[in-house]
Image 1 (cartoon, rainbow, N blue to C red):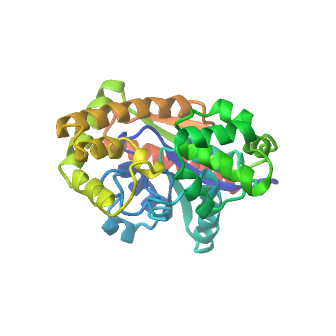
Image 2: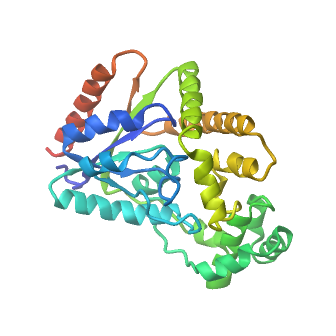
Length: 315
């Protein structure tokens, strides 16, 4: 290993529905790896169909971490991910196996590998719930008085972020903007190689619509109804994701099922575009157009790239 003693890491990135999961399984088998999920939606329990979670049968063969680690009414932050992911890496390597990061949440990758989040921002879930229960206008007015800088960058109706910023101020006496202004990137302990997967836009768009329709035919509407029936508010951050938002409107009688399907597909396409905008900035990265060769050929190339990086990092 280099003098810096950095841990060699491989991460599979790419837009939603590109095929990260399928490619990662062969990669995990070849590397004797366990997967660490980098997905801000799969952290939530009871949200399985809409987040396209890997089956429990596959998880028994290849352990997957950071799936089902929070209830839908809990706040799960990038800071939580950083702490838990670092713990996963240590435990996986202690078992003589390799950690393999797989997922499409760019900010989680940046938080962990760029060390952007290291401060211990205060939290109090009871206070947060009390603040969230206030009307949006009152909540935003309080934030403007206590932390005008944070208020200026937040939408008045973004109750989740507004209440979080106000919570930080009430607990610490310092504005959230001051907490985050103190952050400075520090050197990462990881030597990461990003394996980027992509497909031409028309192929990806078709794949997204097929996946959305498959999800809707596989219990997605019933999953959202169960969440609503069990008291999980449509206003929760976990319920604001594409698909969940549209199906909530469907169950409220404000949207047809076909409108919910198309709304989900459109939102997913927009999300995939934003993902690629972020991922194109990630480095070091090698990119694979999955449409150019067979899955077996693509898998072989990815395994070669991963092993080369791990071998070089360990010299």
